[in-house]
Length: 255
Length: 203
Image (cartoon, rainbow over all chains, first blue to last red; front, top):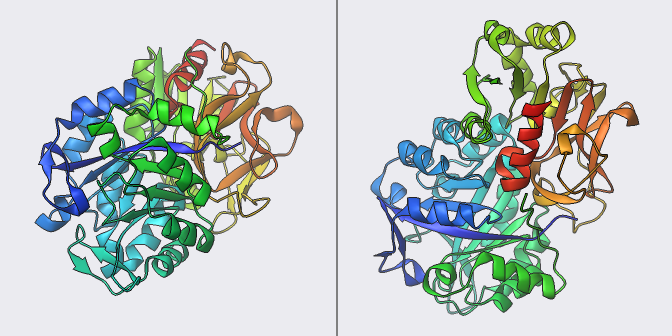
């Protein structure tokens, strides 16, 4: 049986790891290499590394940095931030990324998702969706690190991304991100029902029950950042909780 | 122990190299089939689509070189993920394409049993193996990391080394003589993956 993945997300800006509530007031939280090593040693299911400074700065992915970090990562590594061209993807996969995450570029160049999927296979193309929920309940995707409205509905956009060739979709509630009050379960359920590719829940995990809720809402994986940075929580404990709740998680072979 | 990693421009070469080195092998990443003569083992990695991969292998002169390395020189060869699928006779991915033909079988898209099973098959899943050198010391049912939309359908049960419970049953390892293929990524499967790679080096 396929196991539910528990995925720490590392958000990088320049050489720092950062975290900030609702995509705002970022602060440095440590050197990324140290985190990659620790999560690798803890044998996490997967790691997502997002360079949040790349797109706002108008630059591509920092290939050298990814190459350095990937050297220490023997678990699956998804890399995102600043990807606008097929060449970026080729280089990232070459230096050790297993999957790439495309967000902003998909809005202005949807064909990139398709050409990337055709060239490298849908399985290594993760589409990331950041959205906000307006006061009237309407949901809207935002691009460029949550700064620009797109007019798109996240559920419809997820379907479109699947049609374009994405192999997974990571859905992040901007308002809930970093607040640790729980995921947006309604949207996770809506997106999961609307697409047939795996959905990665993102934004808001504050405890293990939140993760269990997201899986029960339909997520194939639960990603989180703050909970691992600011609390005693660990991915291993999260999985123990999920297992106790009857959710299949990966067993750890010790060799 | 020199392990030639076939570089045809589409693999997760860096991960494969690091894992081989971590397991005690000397990794030789090569885009030149002539390097096979200094190799003790061959790894065909792969992330991508089947037709492009076969096109690149053909252009690079690898197709006959790999067949000869296996059939004439008896070099142990391990195909990983797409590299495993390339061992088959043909694939339906995008367009019908001929494979390396090292293990009889064909590649077809995963057909989920119901909506709870998603494609691609991404994540950690159980590998139930017949005991064999490649899985030495690894309990049957250990979890490995998968990420794929297509799967290997061997012509003969004799070539099945392991299966995984997904979309009814998905073949997760195949073998024939000294050629083997694994659908999962040992280089990204942490300790269990390293054990399998060490087993391959020890074949």
